[in-house]
Image (tube, rainbow, N blue to C red; front, side):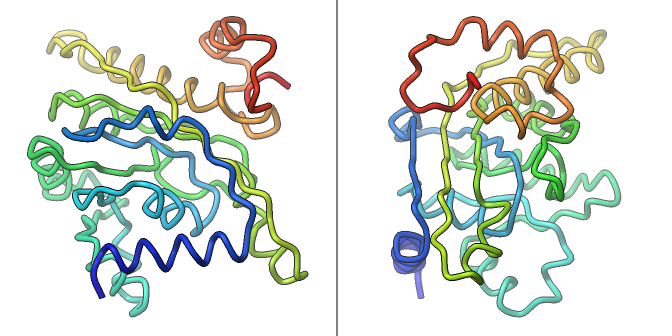
Length: 231
């Protein structure tokens, strides 16, 4: 099996088993490297994003624990996933990710570092901001809702309604050494608040009261058509 076949099969399965609504797909660059910063609710998230991006250079950072699960491991190797040890600063994985981005690849990352078991955003880690700076690539915030209850609904013979929205690319200025920690945190907060602004209110979690989120929501048109964001 190749990437194209896998993408087609995932797309067909999602279309058959769920009701997926996609916004902002036209914002994705057709070439060049960039990071997809995605909130993480379910194992459905990664296949969903992968199925929507028709580029062979798409891959993701994946927790090493999935090496021990044959089916997941096979899929991840098929898409050249980059294994990362989440329990430490995995410099080898970060270098691989940086080189992939510098070579024009697309990399999906969950800034929270793991799945949210409540559906609400957790505090983002600075890894996405770090990689964006080292690779010199933009970050595209991606907001997913509805996958957190998808499996439960399928078991009850219901097709879950899933929404995914791609935000505008964010390009950060190069980080100066003397302000490194503050800049990484500031950029991380910007990424997470951009994601939160595209999510329904009950998904915003840690960032629900963040001042930057309030600014973003105020700037949103009151007649936003997709119903995400203002609620």
